[in-house]
Structure formats: structure tokens, C-alpha cells
Amino acid sequence: QVQLVESGGGSVQSGGSLKLSCVASVSGYTYSRYCMGWFRQAPGKEREGVAHISSVRSARYADFVKGRFTISQDNAKNTLSLEMNSLKPEDSGMYYCAAFQASYCVLDPTRFTYWGQGTQVTVSS
Image (tube, rainbow, N blue to C red; front, side, top):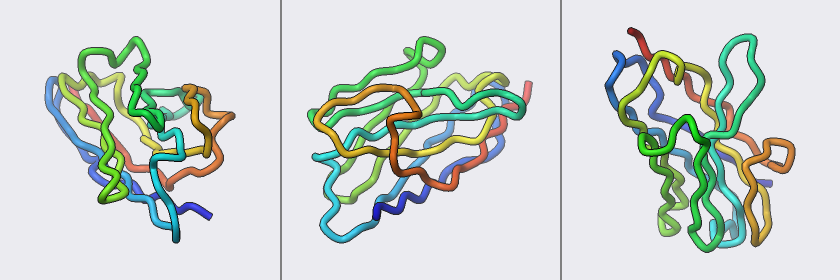
């Protein structure tokens, strides 16, 4: 069982920045065997993919965050990060870290097996 714990959410004004972190904890866990992703969900909306990073550190971003968000992972610390810049009010929502074990990666929430509890991001105009 993989446990994922997010942190770093908060409230910022439009144009501001936040950095989210996700720490994975399980005996024998290694990011090198997993696809890791960030998803978000706003009230009344479906959960949507934000970015993922594969076991070979190939990253993919949703069009609505390209150029503004950066996903990264620190294998030594078992930590996944999402640096968010130029935030917009429409970026508000609950952000989730997720993972599934595979050598490939897709930004499809139905493929992800493990989920964190989420961290709230609120961007005011």
C-alpha cells in the first residue's frame, strides 16, 4: 500500500505562486517504478489531470497549465512537487497527488491507483 500526503496549498492572489509537495511512504517504494501525477477538482466539476511525470522523468502537462506549472520529483526524498506560477482564479480547487505502478504514464485519473487526501488551492482575483 502506498500512502501519499500532499501539502503546500493555500490562498493567493491572481498572479501569485504556490508550490505543492507530495510525500510517498511505503516500505520499498521507489518513484522509479511509478507514474506520478497531479490532479485537481473544483466544486461541481470533474477531476482533471494537471501534469504527470513518468519513471524516466518525462513530463506532460494539461494545456491550461503549460508554461505556468512545473512538475518534478526527488527520488531520494520520495517527494513529488508541483510549482505553480501565474496562478489564475480558475486554478482554484482541491489538488491531489496520485500514482500507479507502470513504466508508462498517462494523464487519466482512472488509471491511478493511489491517491492522497488533497490540498486546497484558492486563487482570488
